[in-house]
Each structure stands twice: as C-alpha cells, then as structure tokens.
Image (cartoon, rainbow, N blue to C red; front, side, top):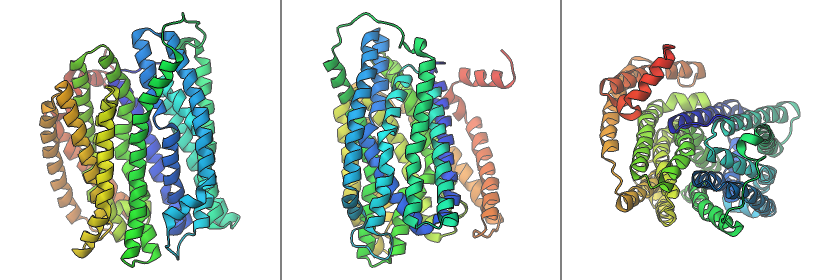
Length: 543
C-alpha cells in the first residue's frame, strides 16, 4: 500500500470525494424525475435523519483513530497503535447497535417532529417507514470509519478513497434501479419505493466494508497485523480516553453540520406554514435548501473533505514534534487551496443557477434562486472544516466546542427572525434561513482563526494576499461570463439547451480564471514553483 504526501494525499482524497459527490449529484436527475416532488421530499427526510444518527455513531472515529494511529506511529509506540485499532472496533460495535435500536424504535416520534401539523403532503407514517428502512445502514457503515481511520493514520489514502467510490456506485445503482422498478414496473406505493432506495445505504456500506477488509487482510504484514510488538507503557484505559477525547469534538462538529440542515428544515417548514404557504411549496422549499441544493454544492464541499483527510495526520505529526512553522505553513496552504478552488466554483454555480437547476431537476424559479444563494454556504463550510480540523489536530477541543456551538446557536436563533424579516421586505422568506446558515459558519470560522492566532501566533498574511488575487481573478471571470450570458439566449425548460449552455459558459469561465491566476502568479503562490515543475515534468514525460 502506497503512502501519500500532504499534497498527493489531498489530491487523491479530494479526487475520490469529487467523484463520489459528482455521482451523488448526477443520480438526482433520473431519481427526481422518477419519484417527483413528494418522493424526493420523503427521501430527503430519511436521508437527513440518517446522516445525523450516522454522525452520532461514527463521525468522530475515522479522524480520531487516524490521529491516534499517526501519533503512536510518530512516537514509535506500535503495540499501543494496534490496541487502539482493536479497541476502536469494540467501541463501534456497541455504539452502532445502540444507535440503530434508538433510531428504529423512535422513528415515528422523529417523523412527527419533522412533519408537525402540515397536511396535504407526506404523512408521519410514510416518514417513519423510510427512517426505519435506512436505519439498518447504521449497523454496517460505522465499521468503515474505524478501518478508514487506521489506514489514514498510516497516510494510506487510496484504499479508503476507492472504498468510498465503490460504496457510492452501489448505493446509486440501488436507488435508481429500485425506484424505477418500484414505480414503473412493480407499481409500488411511493413509501415502499423510497424505502427500497434508502435501504441501498446498507447494501453499499456492506460491499465497501468487504473491500476494505480484503485489502487490509492482503497487506497484513505492511499494516503490522502479523508483527508481535513489545508491550509498552500505554494502558487500554489511556487509549479509550484518548479515542473519546479525540472523537467527541469531531462528532460535535459533524453533528452540528447535520443539525444545521435538520434545524433549517424544521424551522423553514414551521415558519412557511405560519405564513400560510401550501404544503407542496413548503416541502419543496425546505428540501431544496437542506438536500437538493446541497447535492449540487457537494462538488464544492468535496475539496475541504478531501483535504482534511490528508491535513489532519500531517498537522498531528508536526504538532507532536512541536514544529510550529510547519503547522503554520500547512494551515495556510490548506486555506489557500480551499479558496483558490472554492471561490470561483461558488461564483460560477451562482451565475449558472438557472440552467443547473433545470438540468438536475426541472426549471423552477424558486429552485434557481435557492441554489444561487445557498451555494455560498458551501464556501463557508469549506473554510469551517479546515479551521476546525486544525484546532482538533492541535487538541484545542474547548475552542472547537465554543466556535462550533456558537455558530450553531446563532444560526438557530436567526432562522425564524430573518425569514419573517425577508417576508416583511417582500423577499422570499426561506432565503432568510440561508443567510442565517452563512452567518453561523462565518462566526465559527472567525472564532477558530482567532484562537489559532492567539495561542500559536499563526499568521494569515500570505493567505490574505492570495485571497486578494483570487478575488481579482474571480471578478474578471464574472465580468466575462456575464457578458457572454447576455449574448446567448436559451430556453431554460430544455435540459439539453441548459446543459450545452453550462458547458460553454463553464469552459469560458475556467479559461479566463486560469489565465488570470497564472498571470498574477496566483497558481505559483499556492502550489509552489517546485511542485509546478514536478507536474510539468510528468506531463512532458521528463525526469
């Protein structure tokens, strides 16, 4: 198994996550067309709840195990490393079974919390049924977390990345084939059809788990499974305590992100119902913000997710050896990589929101407006992931709690007031919830960056200089795109015309941004001259 450097690990993990998220975007086109607005809303309810409970059962373990394995590797405590992996597996067995039982038994209560008193759409019984169907995945998917964490702790990124692709491909296949057969062939009810679709999470997780265990068993010697290490002074109690200490902040962060969506969904539905909107509009608006716009934003989010996989063990190694300059450099490099990729992507999706929504779903003015604003939450989320991952890598758990929970509470507190304010101003009320989410993430990021600067004298000057160049290049790209858009007239109701329009505009935007970034030395500032020369040598087949 090949180990990866920081940049290589970032690109491998990011590429796999982009593939996974891109597939996650594409499948919604035929799925949405098959099950319609009510079916897609029912799927969104089950999916959002599943993610929250999955986070409770396993969110912190891959990064916690990765961090612990890397720490023991760096210190040469191999026996403790192996015991940490075994203890992690035992912990996940207990937690996943407990979470599954809770989710299965209390499915109806959770469904009641979501639907409330809204009538005319999906029923509480429908929502409870699909929640129970997806709950079985909790028995399998968490085991993936521990195995991935062990591999990532050894800086082996490719195996866990491939397993993600396998899991996604199988899940999407079951969703599409199951929904088509259910509706078109077997003529099942919408509830049963969505139940088949969400059960795909269990089957796909099981297949990915089999692949990872196969690869680990095949490389037992390299991973240290066949070696009997000398007993060290680290006790099992210390290991359990560290796993819990390392995992809890990650769990809180991931749950906070999932709850951001869940709270938004519930509050949007309650507030729009208070404003006397019809059930179909309420369900569409709530799920468009919390699920369907988020599906498109996945490509932007994948950059941060992939980067954090490689960033955490790298910063842990530097922190363990007290190499503060390396910590500073890696954080700034991560922030710069996030900004140079995320900013133009977000602006591009905002400018192309109408044809993108038309291609993925069906042309809808409200959907396009939601996407054009909601996509900015992806940018704030990316920066939030990097800053929070850095705090956790440096054992700044209290700062993680404060920054995350503060942002979460601000988001929750602002949701309803901003929606009512937007309605009073004659604006679409649900956009107030989008603004509340952006503000929440922004506050969390600012608190995290301030803590890192105060405690470790980290400097963001270089990143700020890079950001100015990114803004300059993005403004030029935006100006050119707006001009070209005025010259092309299309029918947004046509998926084919919309797709061709996206391709043309996107190619022009990417080309303009790349030329501007190159001319201003932005690319060299972020990636470094040596790395660019290395890429150039590979492309020209020179050594």
